[in-house]
Amino acid sequence: MGNSQNKTQQNTEFIEEEDQCGIIDLDELVEQWIWQTYSKTKLLSRYKREDLLIKVNWKNVSFTQNDVYFYNSTSSCFPRTLFQTNFDNNTSIEQSYNLTTNRTTCSTLKILFTQSLSMSQESTITLQLPKQMISLQNSIQCEQVISFGKDMIKEDDIPWNVNSQLRVPSRTRLLANLNVDEEEFSSSFSTSIRISGRIIASIATHQSPNICLKFIVGDIVDIISKVRKTHHRLNHFEIINENLPSIAFTIHGKCSFRHGVKQYIVLSQESLELSSTSCSDFGNTPSAPSEYCHLTSSYMKTVDLIHSNAKNNERL
Image 1: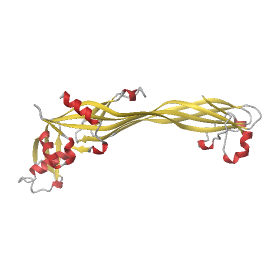
Image 2: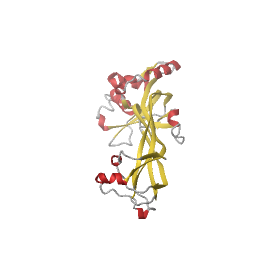
Image 3: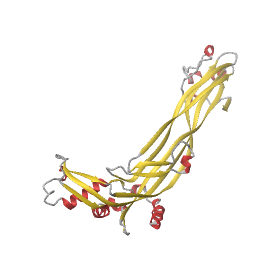
């Protein structure tokens, strides 16, 4: 079994996403098998397939997960501007202004399936997230439990706060940006599942769902072996003939984690006397009036309005 597991892990990296089969509904496979096998019996031949209500009990079927294999991993870091404003000092003396703002970014963990199983009974896989992902945020749980075939997205707000006093020289415009650096790690993953055991299915009609017409018991290995003969999509199931026959299926997916790691303020200034000749570029740009220096400017503007002839550019 160990050799088979290693072989699976070595080969999964070369399975292109377009060759993966998406989400396969195990309950639907069982229903197809029941209809193919029993539809011509005296009891069920009087019904159409859409008239029947089939409920599958999976409690005697086991799902054994092998190790998770991560591949095609990438990481990146990029800045985001959360807030922009400017302070104009039109007086002949230096003025002080308060820069105060509260902003949030979203920390996002995504786990998406590109090839998986689904079923009516709750069944899960466990992902041990890569160390690179855990290092971005210590509060993230390294072990994530996800239901078969159900994508998971977890989001948490991260607050960023600024409360600083800025001194602006006479006849000067001060431009202030609040920037945040975000890091993102993404990877593809795969894990092999072994399936064995027997299902129990009850058959009723939609008209009388509480009256059971028949109970059917079937080995899941035999069921999938028979159904996949007429479904090319089911070739991703592998029959393992050992002392206890089982089905092997490889789950594929993608995971990513994006998180803000640090904030910083970028300041630049320019002379209002030099920029007065091109004041039309700024239109009616508001700023904190000099007679109300204690007030906070909250005007948002695009970086395109910042002139490139800044006399000073510093980072706090």
